[in-house]
Image (tube, helix red, strand yellow):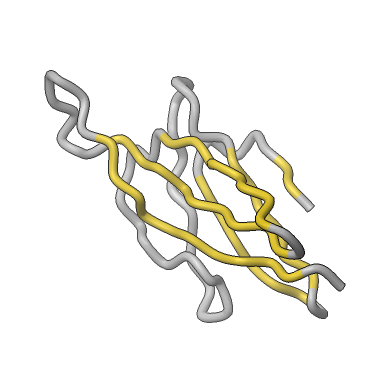
Length: 88
């Protein structure tokens, strides 16, 4: 399940379902209190990002790509989280 509008990035798994919150566009960023069960633990702000999804046979591969901070010219993008979800 993917959702947005927290102006940050979160990833968690509950009962075998991966949940994503992705709102890393250009709006005012918000800090997130990370819980121990969160699968993404970085707390740096701002967290402007996008997610790349790649369907590879019977699995979905995903990578969160984040704009480097401090924001520089030219922009520096970094792969900061990745995961694989196998087909059920």
